[in-house]
Image 1 (cartoon, rainbow, N blue to C red):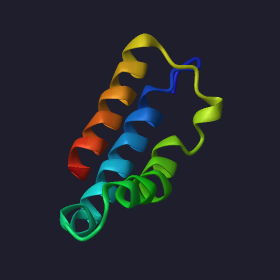
Image 2: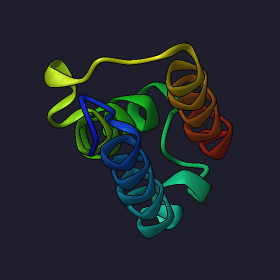
Image 3: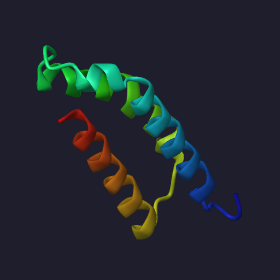
Image 4: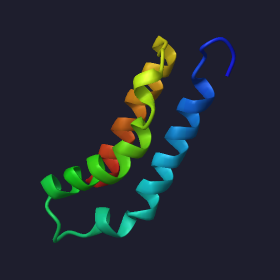
Length: 79
């Protein structure tokens, strides 16, 4: 990471979080689990992986857009 650029860390976190989402595919496809519970599971088991260390990030617009699009990707997988 050069001079405060968090791009590599953000990309790594996004990759880890997407991997976690894919690992939990059986939960997302389970029709007996409510959407509210799936959201709680996602926020607990996936979003925490994504945001670990984020309090130290300085985020540029492009990175913010990537984080937001990743979050929407997560929500689409729950449906």
